[in-house]
Length: 330
Image 1 (cartoon, rainbow, N blue to C red):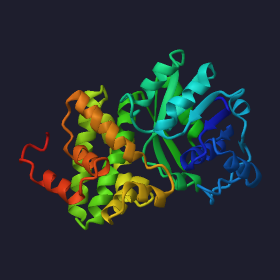
Image 2 (cartoon, one colour):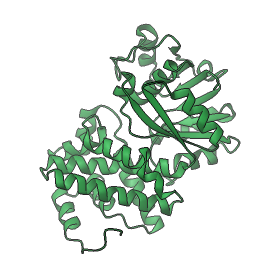
Image 3 (cartoon, rainbow, N blue to C red):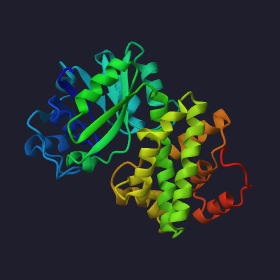
Image 4 (spheres, rainbow, N blue to C red):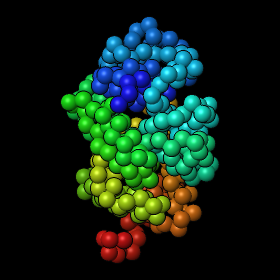
């Protein structure tokens, strides 16, 4: 794998991926919109705001200049929130020959998955990939053992990316099911808000695992309707990422649910968390996509009502528990 990489997005996940790529031997430049943050990263060689305990390897540098960041790179990795993804692609234009992203979620205005936005904005880009799976940025930054999925438009590009990412503690697995990996990354964030709500309301372990299991069923149902392989949802980007995000308080989405259970508003919770909580926008986008495709997602529907419409969580739970019994396969 060629060794010159630009990472666009200097949040916690973009920084963690830049560090991991540099650890594996690549020369990496990381760019972000917040020039003050980038200036501090240039000076201190650490992202003190998001990953203060993860100093930069020697081959990683912060670059405040967009043109210099993307110049002479073998591939570009985008790690920005879903609402900024299209804008970054439009700015890249023809500079994106080989493109990867760690962005999760559907585009709210269109219901498109990230790879569909790429096809629309950059139709000439034929080598592209998504990175997803059960990973917390802090643990990747610390070099703890991790596994993730890399789904690409070609098996060769997936293999190149996996090689570029992998070190003895970090293993990347390849796939060509981009739809499945992207749907998993979007839906798990919404379900994780539900897991935080359930735990915050004191519903117990039985309710948590039921929510995770039935949430996996809804993830699979939507993914298959969108063209995914159902087996993908039993892997790292499906069940793996879902369980991680629902059960550990490093998850911003789970913390959002806990805050809502404590009586805080979405805005108050976001202010407290101090980072983008992707599950909030995903709740609307996934719900609307399910309506377009006429796919029944009862848990997602009720979480949409709580997060977007402000319905009390107790009322949403009552609706779920009053549903008619039926086969587990449905």
